[in-house]
Image: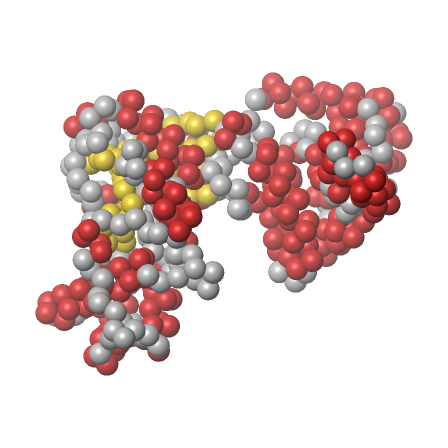
Length: 442
């Protein structure tokens, strides 16, 4: 990959020579919109690469207002060529066929898509474009018209970062320090408390970590998953992260627990990698350790507490008593010091509410309400178990009153479960979870 980067830089340098160095230096100081027009004018490969690098360098020098203006320019001036599109529409109407359909498709493509493709030719272009989309998200907060620009980024990134280009690598304690530092920084589910904590997650024989990389983003993980090898399905994250636990020889493990999945590149938001990652890691682990029989997650439920707040105000048909509503309204931090009887009643109630949240609560469009649930159920997993008290950290209490869930991946059932969820919004769940549902009241 280093060789490829050096080669591309040499080609860009040759492009500058072809343009003429003085002319290139003059051009790179021209307004960025003119540089973009020049890049689209159809120059040769080498000179085009040099121009692309000039555009990206100019973009990186822009301040926030300048970047917002750049995105507005892409939206207003680099859409489809309307005259060409009108001609293509008339040609199709006059003579519908494969050729006129193809011409219509090409004419309808926004010019900015081709501009982004050519910018990607510059050395390090992919990395800059990913950061460019991060800036676009910020600009979209005040200008929703830029959604059309983001649609073009997303369309192109979906092709550039498809599974065929991704490389799966295991991350262990011997991995390069700059990669390990990024694992600490990007961990989004269970914060890594420094290098000692990271070592506990990577070095023992019963721990694994895998990440997807892309050839154009050297040593930049796109997404990674942390895995615990165990003899049983854990009920809480404390069992997994405890520094006092006994290390299990990998050959004795029967269960692989995916306990943290973190996306690393904000600029690739909405580009799905996680479904490929889990399935690929499960296959690789099964080959390495034939004794593994069970593949599960230990997952957070980030929207549960927020949903409960609304339920306390309007319990609907759940038949909650005033006492139960008061219990659910209790601040999460107070629950640590409850007496045993009160805690057991509360745990039972939380389990029932979580079952309803997972199995029956829906968005206005009829989808499962929890984003993590949508991810795993959409991948074909089954909701296996609800774990009250699974995460008693400050974040766990704040987001889900400490409740976690297990999703189970049965390789023989993944396709059937996926179809049930994708076509009918059916949540496939174990009998144990379904038993927690309270009967609906009329």
